[in-house]
Image (cartoon, rainbow, N blue to C red; front, side, top):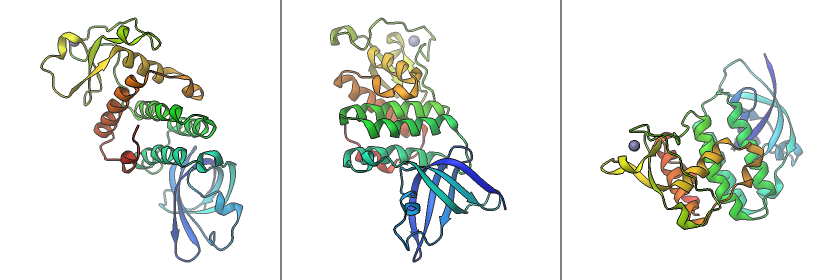
Length: 262
Ligand SMILES: [Zn+2]
C-alpha cells in the first residue's frame, strides 16, 4: 500500500467511536484528503494536538490509491498557530477562511496557489496585533481565493463596451477624490463604466478607489497581504461586493458568513 508524505493544514476533525478521529486535511502535494487516526483520543499526546483544526503539520498516511479514507500514520506539528487559537476573534475569522477552503475544494484537488494563500493568511492572522487588520485581510483572502479558483474579476475594461477604465485616484487620496462612481457586475464579475451603468441589472455601485484597491490586492505578494489598508467607508463597500461575489460564484451559502460582521 502506498505511503504518502506531505505538509498539510488540518481543516476539520470529528470524533469516531470511543477513541478515534476522522480528520480532513488540505495537503500541499495531494490536495484535500480524509484519514482516520486510530486510538488518538485515548491519551493526551502531541499526536492528538497535531490533528486540531488550523494546525500546520507534516503528515504521513497510507491507503489504497484514491480511497476516501486513508490511515494516518504520524503527524508532526510545524506551526501550531497558538496565538490564533487563543484569541476568539482571530479564531472565528480563521474558521471562516477554513470553511471557504473546505467547502470549495474537492477531494484530491491539488491547488498550490490556494494552499500557499491559506497558509500565509493563517500566519498573518496569527501574528496580527490589531483585529481591524484581520477584517480587511479576510476580504483580500476571499478575492485572491476566487482568483485562484478561476474567478478573477475583470477590473481594467468595462464588461459591456470594453472601454479602458483609467483613474488616478490612489488609496491615500481624500474621499472627494474617490468620487468617481462606477459599477460592478456581480455575476459577470467585472466593472461597468459610467455610460453603461444605466439600465444594467445585477450591478452595484463602486468607487474607483475600491477598484484600485482590488487590483493591488490581486497582485501583491501573498506574504505582504497585511500591508494593504483602506478607508473604513471603502472597506464596507468592498466587503459587501466580495460577499455577493462569493455567494454567486462559489454557489453555496457558507456557514461562517453570518459570523462575520464587519
Ligand atoms: Zn461601458
